[in-house]
Amino acid sequence: MNKRISIIIPNYNGSCTIGKCLEATFSSTYDNFEVIVVDDCSTDNSIEIIKKFPCKLIQLEKKSGASKARNIGAQNSRGEILFFIDADCILQEDTLALVNKSFSEVENIAIGGTYTKIPYDDRFFSTFQSIFINYSETKKEEPDYIATHAMSVDPDTFSKLGGFSENFLPILEDVEFSHRLRRSGLKLIINPEILVQHIFNFTLIKSLRNAFRKSMYWTIYSLKNKDLLADSGTASFELKTNVACFFLNILLITLFFYYKNTGFLVTILLISVTNIFASRGLFISFYKSKGFSFAIIAALYYTLIYPLAVGTGAFSGILKYIWIYKIKQGHV
Image (tube, rainbow, N blue to C red; front, side, top):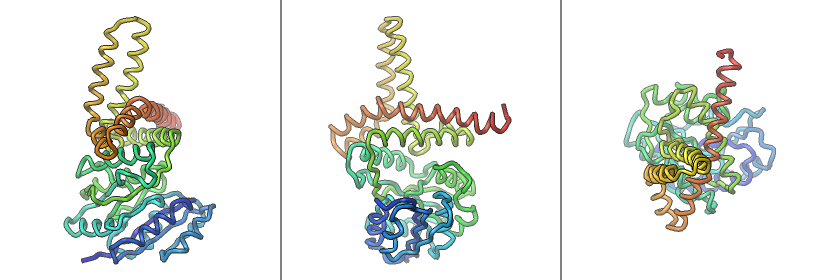
């Protein structure tokens, strides 16, 4: 039975991507769906583009954020399955059919998908990010969270839990909602066949800025949630090990130049080998997706540059957490 799927897309100044997103959505081989786009007061020509497609357009009166937009979309839906994606995501022809099939096979679940390994813009930094996210989110069949770039859930369950928190951090509302889903007794499942292709348009600066920002907010949330060391999707055990090894090696290199003791170099080598072993699954994914040359460059970027942005983001998150939840609220 083909259940009616409500595809909910929040949009804010997405004129560069929303047309591609909607074009792919209406090219689906699945025949029972509706599309609801909630525009969060865009100042570009997004509205003109959206109106070219047979979707329900809801325009918010004031800028309210993606959580509010998704909640409004859900409230105005008529489907038996809510499927959340982003305005920069490209559905595959069989994505909706796979969502329907997954819901037909198992009850009392929320089902997530992930990005294709190769993004819409197949350039190094975008491809690195897409493979990294695909690997991290599909590592476990029962994940810690389901991301809103491909999240499907029963509308009654969504309504009962109150939807996405609208008074939350600028990002990670899907992580917080997933944790509420799990605490309510619902099972979270990742189906690696449910894929959307993402439009990143990443450069080196955009890649590092994204890593810093996500790490900062993730650290704030994780400290508040008391799960800082959890193996959670892209905030994975491998990434946390990678960051720890990076900064530990920086310390050991400094000590080597100060004390001129070759024992520090041996320790650096052992730490590096340990880090490579811990992240071997990701490196294999780099290789299988784009070949040997890409895997080498991606591994070097991941171990020698990327952890600097993640680590400094985490440190900023710790400082913000102390300020917001300790000093500002009078706990210190």
